[in-house]
Image (cartoon, rainbow, N blue to C red; front, side):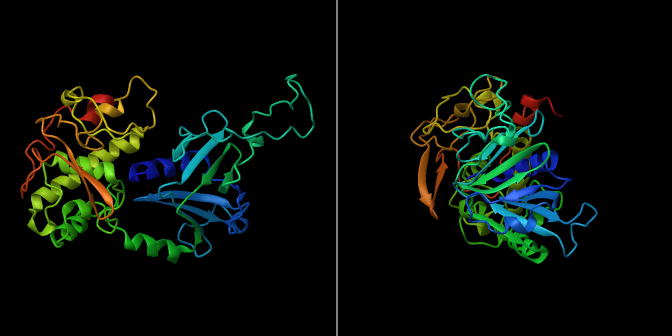
Length: 354
């Protein structure tokens, strides 16, 4: 399931490529019949809240986002959802987010040009590779097409049309999103400190904090040197505030690059292995940190900890697998001394940012 930073990247892709003008909307699969209600409307805006994407549609571009006439397409990708993009050069820096990660047009056939010309001499109409003539896959729940490109949605957990009140009701159920300017970290701190649930469970509760998935959960707790099973009520305020601060920096890096990297540079070559070889965006780029070097404990069960050599463990907790190092991660109430004090944080080292 895509974690929160990827949904923020999706919202940015829509803002850059499709927001601001009228678009065509359809549901090739036929399951999102509401697509006909917003067809030819203007895509006014796109925003992410945790793992939820909201796309605003209105009859014209001079409508305020909070106007009653605005309709919101709410999408939650879940485990199997995916957005794929195609368009003219520069239309979208992303080609796909979610699973499966394929490009629009892969394993698809193209429609012939209207005039039937065959300038390429290959038995097809001229320019049939043009994105305008790409057929959607039969499983496409929603296609949004603008003058410069298109986006196809397949396999989402949720795809629904809401009014403003419906959108707000979803947002009100969520905890603060570390990537939003309006996030209130105090809400996160209070909810953690007041709960008897294990901190590992709380970090995956979207009502406590919006956008964290299993990778961020495992890596945050390792970086905090914190036992995943400690109840929130046993933690100190400073420690919980430190987890929030670390999460903000890690997710900002993820939103900027499309990758999750939690290891410090000096630790990446220490036992650079991982138990499950899944892909991240950019894995074919030799300039990025390989997945095998990106994590401390996530999918490193049975392997030695990069720092202390203790075997990394895994266990099911509330329906999801939690990963941790028993040697490094202890019951503690204070912020781990190294969090926030490393001068060569991964986001600074890789990007050159201050």
